[in-house]
Image 1: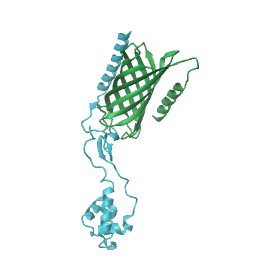
Image 2: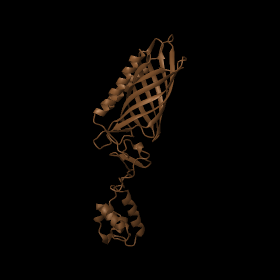
Image 3: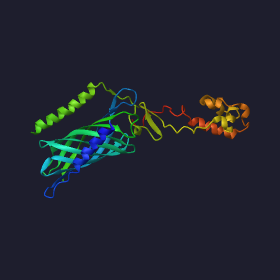
Image 4: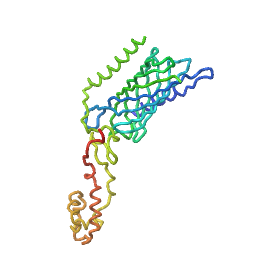
Length: 170
Length: 131
């Protein structure tokens, strides 16, 4: 499991590190959203259980190169706000399918008060809100977190979340 | 374009939700924890329940070499002595003739050790905070 995590992180890092040439332009976007969903795992009883995930607020920045606008990179920070608090971050590699839908894969982790590390994937639907490039977004996502000090044992924690908010072109 | 994209996305979300349901997963009972941070300060999640965090067990002290433990065995320590006998096998091996009689302070110390000993650590507490 650790080897796979390292491989995934390496692929993501190498991909993100591919800086554009001088003639290329970044297309930046930002987003603010809130969401929740389901959190599941085996607490050590041998049975997988699910419950409501913590409500979270996330703020993100995404970047695309104009020559390949279908590919994007994203960095998000999030805060779990209830019923317990925590902060975390996510790195994403995304690809647009059409004009309003994109899919992403990435690495996600909770940084405090305990740590969780894993991978995530999901899709983002953009619903135009204004002509200036702002859109509402709906984002179903899934994450598996096998590492970290927040886990009671050698188990994997799963998140299935739905986040909604606003995305703007910067 | 938009309609077909959106429809596909929602179908994917529905498929994920259906897969979870089909996997035979059950809803967590109220009070079940999945993460240590579900529990309050000083408690950890163990087998889905928040328990008082275990303190490090006392150092490997040979009770037979300490007058404190012997005093407990001798019964001079009051209420703490019977607990010590029940909790530690080492204490029961102490010859009471070696005990320093009247050492009530020592007995109190042993009582504190017993509370920190394994077996007294993991006590089921209340449900996870706020969940």
